[in-house]
Amino acid sequence: MTQGKKHILIVDDDIDFLTQVKICVEHAGYKVTTADCQKDGEKQIESFKPDLAIFDLMMEKDDSGFILSYKLKKKYPDVPVIIATAVTAETGMIFNLENESEHSWIKADKYLDKNLRPDQLKREISKLLDK
Amino acid sequence: MSKLKILVVDDEPGIRSGITRILRNFVVSFAFMEEDFEFDILESETGEDAVKKLDSQSIDITLLDNKLPGIEGIEVLEYIKKNKIGTAVMMITSYASLDLAVKATKNGAFNFIPKPFTPQELRAAIESITKHLFLKRMTKKMHAEGKQIRFQFLSVLSHELKSPLNAIEGYLRIMQDKQVGVNIDDYEVMISRSMERIKGMRDLIIDLLDLTRIESGEKKQNLKDVNLVEIANLSIDTMEPMAIQKNVKIITDFPEQEIITADVNEIEIIFNNLLSNAIKYNKDDGEVYISLKKGNGEFKIIVRDTGIGMSEEDTLQLFKEFSRIRNEKTKSITGSGLGLSITQKILKLYNGKIEVKSEEDKGTEFTVTIPEK
Image (cartoon, rainbow over all chains, first blue to last red; front, side, top):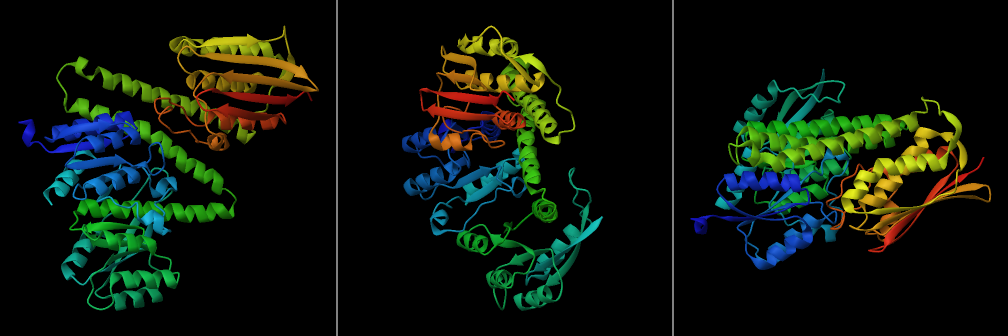
């Protein structure tokens, strides 16, 4: 049975968010592997090919999520990536895409606010996987 | 109640009327806003018409489709940027056009709404853009009043308070839906994590009260002759349970007594912050060394730990409000990010200062200096 399940990689350093997203995504019928930091996430990318990945943006570095996304896409260009972030207009921290080098990092298929409800997340995942 | 003007630019009449219908009776209100927002909707079928409207009246939000019969959406955006027209632009794009998204962001679009969208998605997007506009206006206003720093502080603060709430809410939702089992025991970890987050939030609020008290200057300092050694020992007693948990040994080098004219509470906050950091960022079975000295007309408090230390770059960020060093070694350590900023503010009241020396994986040493008078 597990063989047919799509495999999703989730990387986030907020263990509460990680636990909750894992439960939500497993509930939706996917197999989940988690990592709680960028470094660990990189190891997971080396060890298997996920069907989809969800990365937190700010972990060890402010742009950890972009780095992971870049590394994953370099290896598996076809795997969709969701970047979950708490970076919002409200905190005054907004994506600043002023220079070219920053553009090259923007390699995610979807940005989601961390406040997202479980049903919205499930919908976004199935949208990306059905493409 | 105030009104925001929205211009919908799309060549499909169905989309235009759909958006108008969805937003007609929509009201945005936030707890921290002084007023609610409603929307007036204008429509443009072409980019040319949009430009005309943008030139002739002030429009708060522009919903801009890219594929238009004449000039494209991205060109309208460029026009807005070039002529510095004050409108927040949200691009209506299809998922696939990532290039367009990047280009639009570069040209100052606030964000995107992918097509097709649900009424809920549209409302959420409008809500966020409204909040942004409100904050921008407030910032402008407060900037004029020199309150901008305060405001940024509050924005970050609300973020810090929201994240534990989100975590706890998430766990409660899982429990409500009985997602991992029907026994309360199945949720034990979630319950203790929730407690942990609540504790973190409470600590933050306590720190915040300290900070407000110091900054407001409303509460008068209660200056008395107090014994630094006594306060330090009290603080050690307070922190002991935390030290025992990590088996950290606290070594003191105190004189019999050291009298200073100060507010007991403020001095206690200084010791508590320095000691709790020295324990929290220590290794298991580590040591904390704390010494008190008087000489050359000043008091010197040194707190040294055998902990994880930090880079020189990190030490520069240390005293900023809400700054927390984030790396693999600190990811399981909780804190408000306010402790050292509070400590520094208190010391300023005494014309004192705090300095830091640190070496990664070796430990950190804080030196507090307070002039005798």
